[in-house]
Amino acid sequence: MTKFVIRRVLQAIPVLFGITIVVYGILLAAPGGPTAKFANNPRITNEMREKFKQAWGLDQPIPIQYCRWMGFCNPETQGTFLGSLPVPAAFIGPTGLPNFLPEALSGATNGVLHGDFGYSINSGEKVSDRIVRAALPTFILAGVALVVWLSIAIVLGVYAAIHRYSLFDNAATVFSYVGFAMPTFWLGIMLIFIFAGTLHWLPASGMTDTRSSPPFGSDKYWEYFGSNPLAAIGDIGKHLILPVVTLVVVNIAGDSRFVRASMLESLGQDYVRTAKAKGLPARVVNFKHALRNALLPVITNIGLEIPFLFTGAIVTETIFSWPGIGKLTIDATREFDYPILMGVLLVTSVLVVFANLLADIAYGIVDPRIKY
Image 1 (cartoon, one colour):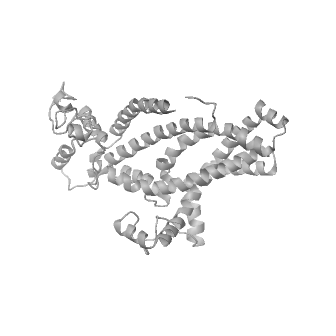
Image 2 (image 1 turned 30 degrees about the vertical axis):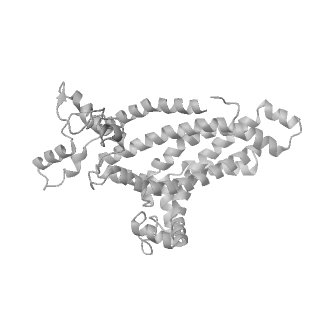
Image 3 (image 1 turned 135 degrees about the horizontal axis):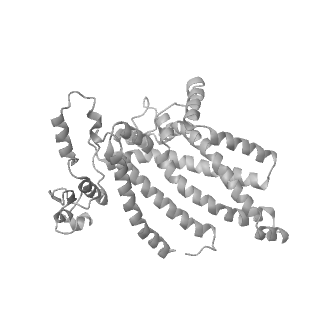
């Protein structure tokens, strides 16, 4: 298993490197560019735009911009090679060693390889700080939704498969089709209208009640959390209900049918019929033999859904003004804040690779027959 994990990590390095090229290319192809936010501002002259480009290194050829963003090149070294490529000296860090090596060896601090994603064009804040601050709310929302989502989906799918064509199975089928066809934005708005606007049972947006506590993530909030932990957790819990329900209802529908189909396939295998013929209890046959094998394709599906939860729940976070990665992505897109967009997309790519690695490891845990 250890050799397999090491091999997969090494295989992920060129994949991630290729992803960075694709991400950079996509954002370069997007209309507007970082200076697009100045288009409708009559106070910004062409000279000021040029100074802005020089300050952010946007006047350099694209290969040099990419090289500096990744941390391969030293931004202090000027000049070009063959008109658009960085000069060989640009790959040398302040200590004389290659710039991409760790800071302790190369002395370099720029670029993704050194944990520097750049600065927000809109606020001037570090991109890494913005992402870290938005990651905690997303982690809370995604973590709660994932536990509820998977628990209900597995229970519904397994029970529907065991009681095939029963009233419960037919009702679950109808629920699945309705839930799968339900638009996320419509469901979120309806929940806000009913439970926040009409019944006034739950808050409509945000993560905390700013009338009784400081903004989430601020220093004052953590002081408040330390002195009133139960009240703070209860406040977050109330704000979690509607966005979690939105994520769960929309996504549980497809996964429950996926679990049902996988479980039905396992129940039809010869080893299950043999176990039943030996007189084993139905509970042992269904949950010890059939379910473990039925979970293999489900694990693959979960490995792809985890990154979606952390970065793809953009609609849900926007509807409920949840201050997470999804809302940060929308705000950065609206403000043409390309450094933040590149940082978010890169983090998403790492999550996809890491989630697939976890899925492969889980195969060996669920099914001992799988050897690496």
